[in-house]
Amino acid sequence: MSAADIVGILLAAGSASRFGSDKLLHPLPHGQPIAVQAARHLKAELARVVAAVRPGAAQLAERLAGEGVEVIECPSAEDGMGASLACAVRAAGESQGYIIALADMPFVRPSTIAAVRDALIAGAALAAPYFRARRGHPVGIAARFRPQLEALAGDAGARAILAAHEAQLVKVPVGDPGVVRDIDRPSDLAPPLAV
Image (cartoon, rainbow, N blue to C red; front, side, top):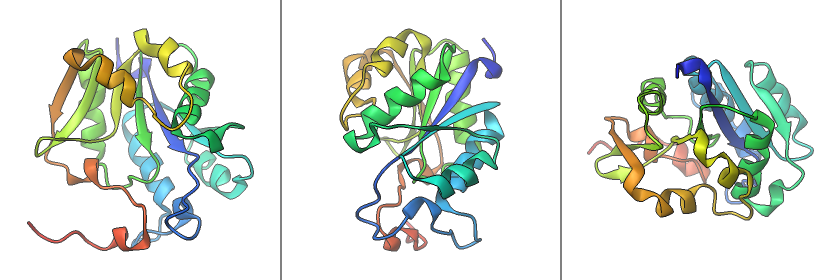
């Protein structure tokens, strides 16, 4: 297996109800929209990235397509993250593995994505980055779980798969606080306090 055998899945179909506006198009301090930054980091380490968007998200779809991402409109996106993930994996088709990333997590470093990818290449069934003992994103899932991914529904995402196969999860330690930093509200864009 090589890096070319692994597909990035970018979940960009959320409603952003807590943010108050179109979160994924909201510019970061350097001007790039949140979802575009997340997509760029995935594309830096993976040749193929498939993004799931909600119906009617034409501007977001256009921006992501401009980054070389395959954009899939998921009619069932309002059912939750699981439904969007299933839609994206079905669109991605056969692959040796999937790296599932969230479009509202723009601070994940490309080096972290590469580390999760490399764990899959080395034979991990499941892989996730850990920052200070906290599991973060993106999550790597081997091809053997494709039927379970395609069967997901509702809002649970891949959490149930990880829980059911926890013994097979490779923990990838990273010094990247971005793996546990998502953007739910405008205040989340403020620089984190030094610790």
